[in-house]
Image 1 (cartoon, rainbow, N blue to C red):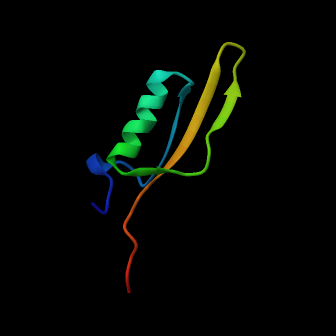
Image 2 (spheres, rainbow, N blue to C red; image 1 turned 90 degrees about the vertical axis):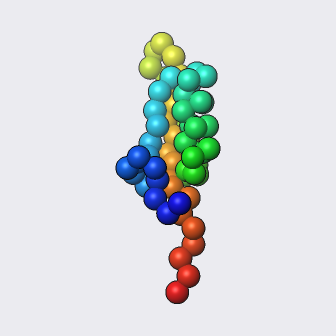
Length: 64
């Protein structure tokens, strides 16, 4: 598949509390064909840890 399903963008940033739900969202994106783009960003909002993870669509290499 050369494009993400359901009209999803080639580049995505998922954000949320550092919990099981966030990890499942990132895992699902990887399962459908996204790749992690560098490491996550992590911050603390005085209540809990918030994480952001950029993902890019894993497109096959283009051959001339």
